[in-house]
Picture 1 (cartoon, rainbow, N blue to C red):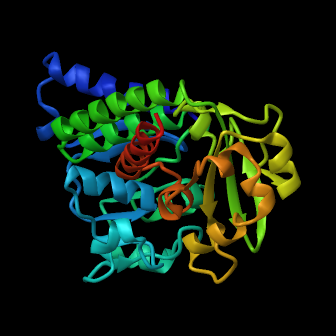
Picture 2 (cartoon, rainbow, N blue to C red):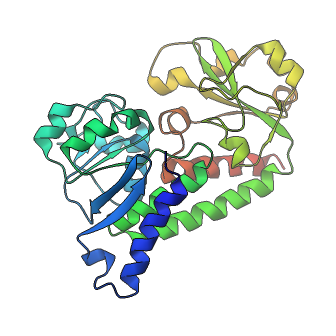
Length: 311
């Protein structure tokens, strides 16, 4: 997989060449070369019929003021409720694109993300395609670079730069707050069970990016985190607990995260005794992986409020 840095470098080099007199501006170029997570593709500038198979990319495009023609078939999360009604091409699930729909749609551009990454070769048969799967080891950088890249493709460079600058500033503010307020542990709840996620995992940005010290140093870094018990939480005794309800994210009935945390062992932790249990927005953290610039900005803003109130 090519790094997000390489991806952005390719776009930047094209923009630089144009700015230095290559004969056109990006707005008037027919296409630009984009290096992305599954290769390099010549992408049309300001494409008209765009199919996006990734909620995070749709979130970023919404922040840029771009509406697309095709979206996943599943019900969009609340943050993308504008796509719940209307005449949009429904192009299959996040994991399984509908190839027949893509063939008939004849899109100018198809954009995939992490969940459909394995289908890139097949999807690219039906139109110019790019894969904006973020680098799990550099999520913030990936969000920033993908925003700038999409700004170039859709002629929204100024707005993209503004969004990136705001996010950088907000993350710096958040890190200044988290540096003063102890350690934490991030939990995913589902089916009445819990898993903890630390640095280097899909939810590790609470530590890697937002600067919360990790309460347990040697957590497993697998895709599904490390299964933990209430006794584990009591022994770890984090100053903060950050809890994400997977069942709520996917619309499945189950024991709510707040109900699961309502017990004597959790209350005996520092986080429980100080009322420092933060319930994270499940759509932003689980469905969109905080990989869109809008949802990441919202997550940062919410945590700034939480930590500011605790000072």
